[in-house]
Image 1: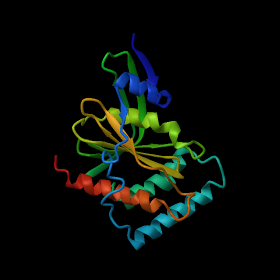
Image 2 (image 1 turned 135 degrees about the horizontal axis):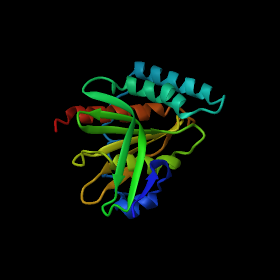
Image 3 (image 1 turned 120 degrees about the horizontal axis):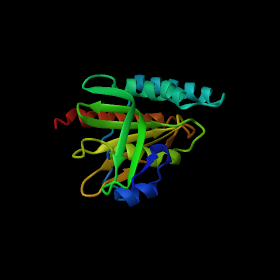
Length: 212
């Protein structure tokens, strides 16, 4: 009998047991968040400083909901990284449904923000309200990434609660494998949005070069 669960209720155990998902500890699996990062210009740093200042001001007046995170943090980041420009396109609230090989479980949900290049999912983005830890959404984000229609290419994900950010890389292969970046947090000294933004720029360059 097929069981249907919502993506927000899925667990990493579900994904590992039903979809054979494996976490990779090898640092060479996900180098895109560490190597060949482009320079963040002075203008971009000024813009990122403003995003941080605005966010730090807003969290003084909770609750800070997902829609606010998307409007004040995600939107400006993606605009600054030129993900709204061709050949990329963006969609919100994209419905997904995936089933395991034996069709014993189906996961359904809606992706908060999806960045595409033609038929390739470049970034799957899940946002959470500010009071939630990122770990709450890891399995949900991975379930969305497993649903990418182009299994020949790596899929990248970003999860944020407005203050913290983490990137995920998923490769299908014989068994789907994933690895995570470190977690960046705006409460740390300096502005770690510089690092987040540099990774976004790196991914954009990577997919602009991809003609496949």
